[in-house]
Amino acid sequence: MNIYGDFEPTLHEILDNLMTRINDLNTDYQNQYHESLFEHLNGRIKSQDSMKQKCQKKNLPLTPYSALRENRDSIGIRIVCNFIDDIYTCIDLLEQMSDIQVIKKKDYITNAKANGYRSYHLILAKTVDGPDVDGNRPGLFYVEVQLRTIAIDTWASLEHEMKYKHNIKNPELIGKELKRVADELASCDVSMQTIRQLIREEN
Ligand code: 0O2
Image: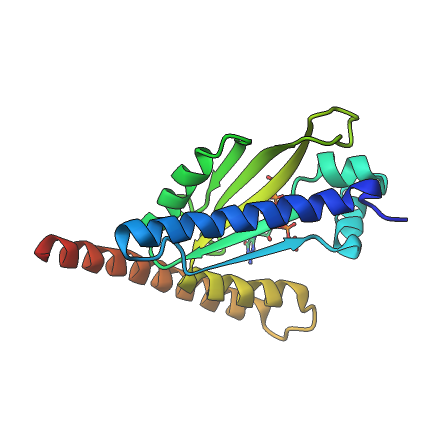
């Protein structure tokens, strides 16, 4: 059984549409300011297995409603920026899209998680002409957007890998080291931004 029911093609259409438009934002920004708004962009539809596991973890029935309403990350987009300021510029531009509503914001950059994780998470509600899982038309689908710097993106991949490895010999020490490195990277991100600002003021 497909956990997304008949909606999987719609999920792919929404992802393709948003990826194209976010890339277009970058192109427009480059044309206007001669620098990139973000360094790169990734998008994915959460795999059937991962979504089923997530539903099971939350004791939810394995239905399209659980996958598309109780969970809001069936469509995921990650925007990786060079500088912290650029993350907030991206968010402003996303908020200006007419068929999108930002319904939840989590700023783990200002309020880092205890393990050192720093990212900005948005849940978007995107309207489409076709029906959704509630039978409404126009339909509504959720999209999770994660925005982070390159430094923190590398860190998060490593930390994510550790989370899924259960045979690590010294998880406390590795966790401590990861936290220390996250704080150093965050400090470098702030310094890089300050240097960019200084260079601009010089100019
Ligand atoms: P996976 O395996 O990546 O899909 P909420 O119910 O909304 O309050 P939720 O759903 O955990 O809580 O949302 P949150 O905190 O915004 O996290 C969403 C996603 O961000 C997670 O999805 C992770 O992908 C990523 N994330 C959050 N915290 C961390 C962290 O400490 N380290 C790393 N590496 N990634 C993190 P999933 O579904 O939990 O995991």
